[in-house]
Amino acid sequence: MSDQLLRKTLRAIDVVPSRELGQNFLVDEEFSKWIVDQLDPQPEDVIVEIGPGTGALSRHLVGRCRKLILIEKDRRLAEFLRGEFVDSSEVEVIHADAITYDKRPLFLEGPIKLIGNLPYSAATPIMRNFLEQPTPVVRAVLMLQKEVAERLVAVPSTKAYGKLGLRVQAEWHVDLVRTAGPECFHPRPKVDSSIVVLQARQAGELSYFSKRLFDDLTNRGFAQRRKLLKKNLSLKAEEWSGLVSRLQCSDSARAEELSLPQWVELCNARDDHPVLDLPEDSSAEIFDVVDEQDQVLRQATRAEVHSEGWRHRAVHIFVLDKKGNLYLQKRSALKDRHAGQWDSSAAGHLDAGETYEAAAQRELYEELMVKARSVDGGEALQEIARIEACEQTGWEFVRLYSCEVSGKIRTHGREIECGAYFPMELVRQWVDKRPQDFAPGFIECLRRFDSNDD
Ligand code: SAM
Image (cartoon, helix red, strand yellow):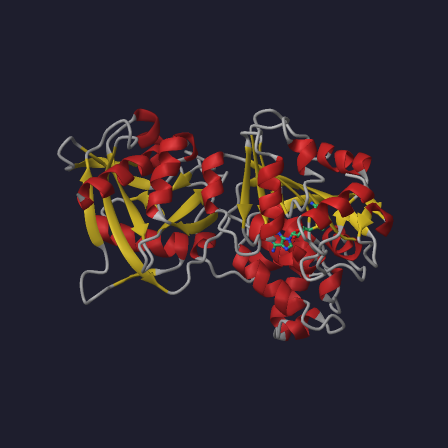
C-alpha cells in the first residue's frame, strides 16, 4: 500500500496512528513482499500474523498458504481486515491482544509459521508469548526495533549480549537479515527497524537442560552486568573453582563472557533434578515379566522385554490443576520410544519388585519433581483405570492415576522437552485431529479416563 493510499484508508476507518499501539505502517510494497518471502510460505502452511494493521504483509500471504490467522488488537483495523479479506476463505481475523492470546489451541493446526511487523511497545512480551516452549511455532519472521533485533543475535562480550538473546538463542537459530530506515513506514518512527528470521533448533543440538533453571541463572547472572559472575550467583569459592574448570572460563568471568553452551553447562552443574542421577542408557533396567493375569513370571532387562514383546508393568499419571486442566509432557528426542510425542504428565515402567503406586510416586518425582497432593483428605493418587496389556500399550499392564500436585513442576530436557497444562476439551480435540502428535499409550489412557467419567 502506498503512503497516499494508506493515509486515505486510515482516514476512512477513522484511525489516527497510535504510538501506544506501535502503529507504524509499512508503505514500501516491494519491501513488504520481500519480508513475506523470508517466511518461505508453502501451500500447506498455517501462518499466524501478529499486528496485521491494514494488511501490508497479509496481502502477500493470501493465496499462498492453507490458513492465515491475523491477530490484531485494534478493533477498527480488525474490522477493516475482515472486510478486505471477506472473499478469502483461508483468512481468519482475530481481534485480540497478542501478549495474552492463548496460543494452545494453535497446536490443533500442526506446525505454525509466524510473521509480524511487531509494535515496538509490545515486541518482547509478544515474542515471549509465541516463542517460549511449548509452542507450535517452528519458523518466524519478525520486524523489530533494530536495537532489540541486535540483542537477539548478540554474541558474548558485547554490550547487546544478555538474557533476552540467550533465552531466544537457546531455542532458536536467529539471523538478522535486513535493516530498514524510518522512510519505509507511516508515520516515520524515530529509530531503525530490523528483520530477524528464527528457525526452531533441532532437538539435541545443544546439551539438554532445565529451562526454568536457565532463566533463573541468567536472571541472577546479568542482574548487575559489571559484577563478577560468582558474586551475582553468590557462589562459595570452592564451588566456583569447580565450575571454572568444568566451564573452562576465567576465574574473574562476568555473565556476558559465557557462551550459550557454557550457560547450559553451568545450568546442568547447578541442577539437582533427579533425572541427572539416572543412567542415560536405560536398556539394562530390570523389569518384572508378567503373565496374562499380571502375575510375575521372572525378571528381564528393559531391552529384552521390549524387543521380545513380553508383558510387563507401567504407570501413567494425569496431573490436573484446580480447574481440571491436564499437564501434558512432550517426550524428549532422546527417548527410545515415541520420541518427540506428547504424553501423560508422567509415565514409566515399574522396577522389578515395585508396586504400581510406588512407581507412580517415583515417576512424579523423577520426571516432574513434585509429589501427589491429597485433596479434601482423600488419597493423594486416585486410581482411574487398569488397562490390560495389549499392542496399543506396548504389552504393558498399565495403571492410570490422577492427582493434583504440590509445588511447581520442574522438568529436565533429557526426559521432557517441555510441558504445560491444557484444557481437557482441547486435548480431546487435539487427539481427534492429530493423533500422530501423541504416544499411543496416552491416547488409550485418555479414552479410559473419559469412560471413567461417564
Ligand atoms: N503489519 C502492519 C504493517 O506492517 O503495516 C502493521 C504493523 S504496526 C508496526 C503494529 C500493529 O500491531 C498495529 O496494527 C497495531 O494495532 C498492532 N498491535 C499493537 N499492539 C498489539 C497487540 N498487543 N496485539 C496485537 N496487535 C497489536
